[in-house]
Image (tube, rainbow, N blue to C red; front, side, top):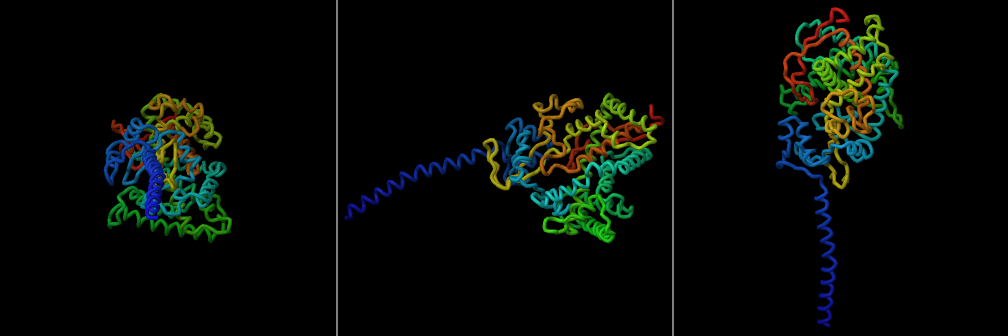
Length: 476
């Protein structure tokens, strides 16, 4: 009996080992495969990853070198966050369009605090969908058509002031002021000058602290920005209260936000309305201002390009009795060459070089694992400068837009459900300002420096210092 027990134990141990060994091998192999499936790349030093390499040089050189070495999908570590970077049109479409639910928008906590946690671009799902529709409705083609006279008045006033100054100006900063004014028009319509001035003053303080080191120490840019954010909230609260008391339904963004009701009949809170107003003003300013600054540089540096744009605009100028008749919607929509120059400028400059997402589940793409919690960055600039999509990508060539680019290869305003809903407003204000600048003004860039600054969007060095002057006659 004892011998039988020992024999049975031996058999059981053997069978256990026999069946366990392949299982353990499979587990070990599975684990190895999981590690092996991570994209190629380097995670850099402990904690800081490759942050120093990224911020010690032109970010686009960093991304291009990585793509050249590892291919169109690679891993890295930035600011302590493991990241997967994607440099192909198909990958960008995968993350932003077809599998967008697997990736959520992600921003540093300090940025959310500054703009407001309820702003639409921090969200996804029903809340984001509702808010996006409200913004799109407030910027419908009919609404944009009605904004043309006010935007044109703002453009003329801005250009006149630059020429009247008679001194070198920071083009980018002036474009920010112009874009902010257009943003005010889109959000509020005609706003009392007192409110407009208060919003501008406090927003400028917030803007200066947005990209500063997030410390609440008194006197720091970030601390001042937080105080300005509180004042902005108070000012917006007063505007919202006045609108509610008037009980008049306006077609601007504030009107749409105030009149919103969801499926349950719930309205937006005052904080949600304020956060989304600040978010839209933020989105309306820096990127458009950067685009305008680059366009003026490209036109200044390429006389043939400038004269081709001017020739198209002068036809409209003469039709409008030497500019005495305002631009019409039909004329703005019929500027084919100027429009192609704008598109090519957006491609060349790639104001939005990349976007941030975070994987909410483990995702597999092209045989590679993107682990849950990792940051995911579609690299728009790499895609815009890929010779497979755009021949001779470093040459400024508006004719490439005579034919629509291949899908998902040109994304100056992002792509998918989080693409910028204000892209038509941006193009509208750019075209209106360009019409008046090339027909009635000249600008000379001061200094011969070529280069790019990031703050965070790419702009020419020192904001493109330039001196503007008014032409004596239209035919000069």
